[in-house]
Amino acid sequence: MLQNHFQYSSRSLAYARSGKFELALEDGKKIVELQPNWWEGYCRLGEAYKGLEKYEEAIVAYKRGLEFAPENHFLYSNRSLAYACLGKFELALEDAKKIVELRPDWWEGYSRLGDAYKGLQRHEEAINAYKREIELDPENHFLYSNRSLSYACLGKFELALEDGKKIVELRPDWWEGYCRLGEAYKGLEKYEEAIDAYKRGLEFDPENHFLYSNRSLSYACLGKFELAVEDAKKIVELQPDWLEGYFRLGDAYKGLKKDKEAINAYTRRLEFNPRNTELGRNLGQQSIENESDAIKLVPENHVLQSNQRSSNQVGLQ
Image (cartoon, rainbow, N blue to C red):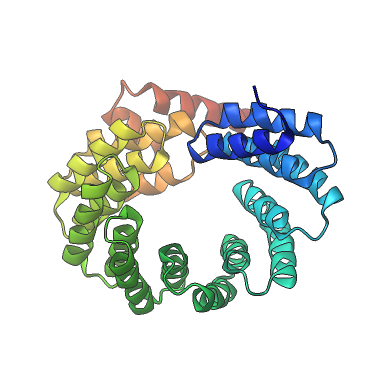
């Protein structure tokens, strides 16, 4: 049996690092029971909640910890990340600025700052934050990955490519590096190179639906729609509730002039997001004017039927 709060803290951290967040949470609660005025207990509690994707509870825990250690940069860093996970990027930014004020020589503060700016679509500022971060930790592959993504968001694909190459140099066994590399090549319309990058990434993470999605799109850009369909089918097999998989599948079928299959793929998205407004645009690209025309082509599609009934009811109100 554990004797004190330090031992519970060590074990909670070990559980969290091994992904056993429920057990980490149990120990976190025990710590704050034994030592309710110790900041590290609330840090452990927050980490466990964050691992369980209970971000609001994590934020409450970090806030409580800051009451006992208001200058603790670790707590601000963890809370900034939790805010970002909730899409509260303005609050994430506030905490990130506090981190770099407290610890201007700590690379993770600039990582949080860059992530918050990226979430706010302020990519130039994100890049500046990542640049400072890289100065402090030039061998950290995560930093190059973040900056590569921001460059790509700005359409600066040559710079994104440079960072992508640096990632795979530093971590040749990391799938995300090849994803960044592929995105940069795709942005430069070098689709064959992009496909090679995604293929390499899949060697290290063969169940990664993001890689299949990006490769499916690259195949479609080359007019290789049969291969695009194969990858799209793999996406929906791996992630059946992910909207983008059905979008890729619909686009691939559309490229093959298989209108019926394309409509069924696009309308699968409506099952997860009934308010999706892109359906009409997708169908329109196939010279199908509206949902009524789509229903004539695929009368057995219950999602289209239901969607049209809902639209009619709204129109009558």
